[in-house]
Image: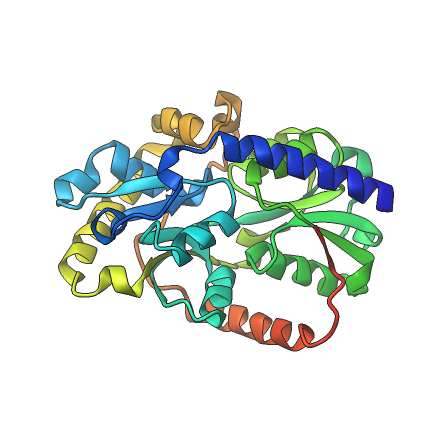
Length: 312
């Protein structure tokens, strides 16, 4: 197991270097307040699609708001961009927001997003139920929705925490590559990466849509929104227009954007869940906020002791 973990660590390091070398210059260095104010960090994931649509199809422009979307491959890099004032807003999740808040970072959630995750397993592992994750490797990101869901999987199967080896793989592209290379037992993936996994005949053990977990969030720094109530209303109007367009015309009408920004094939776009519906801008549901806070409080308690659940 130790040798395998070392190999995986090397794989993550090399792939991560390649990703960082390919990042645009827009993601590097600090920005002055005016240029940073309306930069929004996004991921190559389906919950960001309303933003991509609103920017590409001119909804933001017609609403009178200047928005620049800044792509990232890892949520931890987005955290760094927020903390260093390189972006004003970001697509993230409630668990990460809780973690950032615990570090004294001041951000407000302007809307929940339609982020969903699935826990999938590689086909060759023959894992058909959560209890079979015992002594297996699970790719996820620490202090995120995937961390919360990993805890859910362990608790649901009544497994010992230390018996499920959590491999921290922050880069979403690296994570799906590890599944394609058949070197990771299980992982938590958002869409459209989860669709890629299903097309590879991976088994789905957890689906947050079936659990009725809605943990995605779009946040802005409190400083960037100060005195900008009218701007925010216009921004959310454009966001809702993009949502309406997506729900009316479906994924195929925006296949070009999905393929471009999420680096997936036409086959993946065609395989996306047909019943997927995007939601208008709205605050996170109270039950989701309560769920995340309860998980975070439990995590804070566990952090008083040596935490051996992660491998990175």
